[in-house]
Image (spheres, helix red, strand yellow):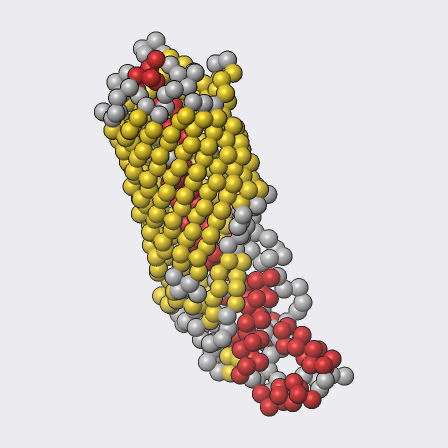
Length: 428
């Protein structure tokens, strides 16, 4: 029988003299010896600062995130020969609650709100409705492009995304909401070239299942865009920046009720480039297109504080740069009808495939009370492949006003996204 001693002295004896097989058995036992339900009742009311020189075994079957936290605690125990009693009492469920998974939702919803801003300021489906030099252009649309002019506009949007967690990874269901208002102005520098700038304000809200935490943010956004046609082909590009002021909250109820709070800000840059080719088929225009998008969000190092209770399980998060890239291939459709009053009604749609290169976020953290307890937590994935669908309609009146509304959806194996947008513009 192999014995694995837990005191710092006997830990040294084990490492130096027991042999490779016995050392391996002890290492495995130590990984599993982070916490025990048997010890939970007797340590939960104990002093969180008191130290234990033993760690009782944990049942097998931990998920990836639980193992990451358990390994971090094992590393502290191996380095010091002891562990605070509060951490020795952690069950598998407790490992989940102390992991700080809510932080992974910050980057994902931040990338989503930037994506929605880009889709508002540089939607080629909308811009294409007022671009000339195509075989299906109506006289009314051509008149809109005859002179150089400024076109101010305002566009509200709101959306929701639900993502399904993975039991093996230890991720949990997430529901996130985004909403915002963008305003800007386009300027037509030539009949076929449109440029513009935009400013936006937005908000986000994220909630994890099983009361694992929430986050919210307020966002300020700035962007520029351009649209150019050459015969039947066109290209649209946009660049944007935003600053997000983020708040996270989570509650840990292991040694009491600890309400942990963090406040920080992030910076995000994003760009999108899209090209399409217009093919007239009777009264309908078909526009096969390809697009690429990148988004990079810079998150600072930040720490949690206790708004109520103790900071025993408060985390310190490392700075990180979350990068998201997506490619799209699809087909847009458009049909235009001139009303009796001279206005132009346009109906459009889109069906596309998207590939998300970095579908799952992650974050690195450590317990402030345990130096050296660094671990990485995975967040829920939005799915690598997604189907995109859009329906939109717009009306351009002879009094120079244009109103557009659209509904976007995205479906993957792990998430569902729905976004509604409106746009009101006036041509000087």
